[in-house]
View 1 (spheres, rainbow, N blue to C red):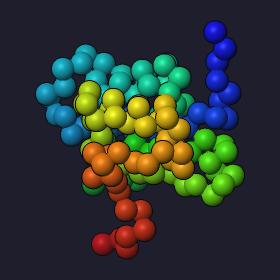
View 2: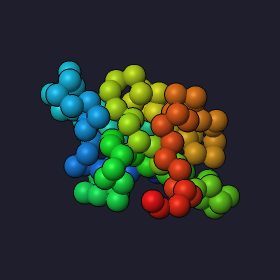
View 3: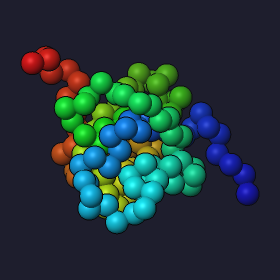
View 4: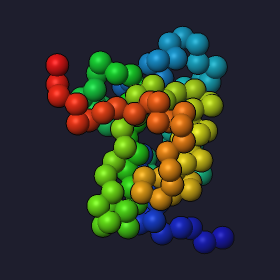
Length: 123
């Protein structure tokens, strides 16, 4: 089985410190939200970069979907989300990433509701 070219796979950046934060103690998975995100990478749907801070501490469960190399060359930028946690939302995120993610597929409505407006002025 051949593996896809990493340049054709979108990326995902997650704050390892706030992953699962919005689920509180109600997460049914022992490995939690970070485990869900790691599974996305393990299945080849996206590459995963774990960081300690995305400077969005007032949000929660912040993840950034990054376009593949082709998308970046076409000028597609990253897409920031807040509150993407739990099996259902993470599955939608993975499906969208597997289909190409930013610049390749329209954003599912349930994810569009989770967008962080990075252009809004700081308050």
